Length: 456
Image (cartoon, rainbow, N blue to C red; front, side, top):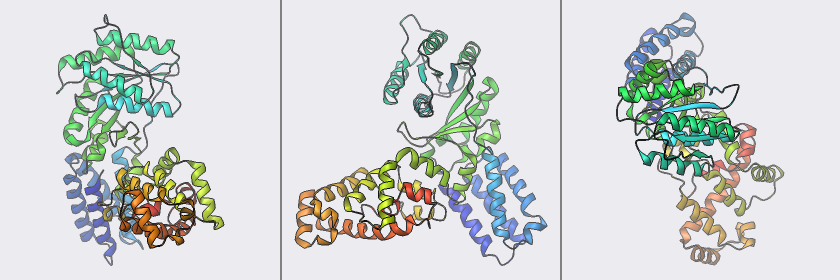
């Protein structure tokens, strides 16, 4: 997400900081590079023009050009304007005072509406809501089947309907009645899509809007389609009055032009992004955090939230206590922590959230911590005796051969693991001291540095 843009902007700022003095000439040169970077990221040209004018107006002021650290001030100005472009503040979902709250999920066919409905149901459940799902797509039976499968995965009920209910409006009304009777507070309505906008689709959605009076009309857009997603969102808003946007497939969009343009063009906030296929690959959108991540400043708040939702806190605190007291950090601890860190997702994505170390992500593009690598490490450690796991120093040549044979790996794999384990023990003590991240984050995730070379 935003990889190409982030690389180019960071290069511009590095050059600016290298200038002995900031002048109108080198500032204009930097603005030209920023403009090209944004256009190449597929940001709407009108949005780029407005952005550059805003940055120029603030960066060319006397107080910036004569400041002690003008380069840093320019970075701050760009960050502020990026945040404004993305929506300034997180846009939260609206709920009715009296349940149920109805949310319409709309968009073109293939944009990811049904998957997003399931992901949103899971998100709401974790937030303490009792959600209900219904598909009113009477044209594609597979769409309703897909929603039923997703509903089971996220443990949220779905209204299946009866044979007599052949119209979207009937399905929606019955689903709302069932939602009330079941004491649930949110109904998510997955609507039908088309390959393109047509009058019949819009009339159907308008009827659903009038009948259900939804608190939210969430437009689902495919980030991979770039400016087409922006144009379609704008058209839906003009015809239907959308209240927010869910951008899917952000993990596959290295440019990010849709995310950067959609707020400015439609006037509606980007509320969620889909960042993978799994039902938990769904994140609330925070403009300020994303702007910081684009500029390589990290995103510790999002990382902490992700860790809190994923990592076993008691286990992490136990490991942290071992580090603080000087007790032995064993190979069993190493194995267990690797299993937990794996749940956080790709390492390069985690690194980008860390201030000052985001550049490591580029160095680790080919270092993937996948299931096979984790399984190999687990197999090696499980092939050791309890005594060997407690004291790796006793693992001599013959023991290494036995461990390799028992785990179906090579002696080289065992050597590599033991070397990484030794390096991790050293790194963890300094990491736990709070030098790299906040003490809170270090306490929750003590073994993250050891993952940098896992499986290598």
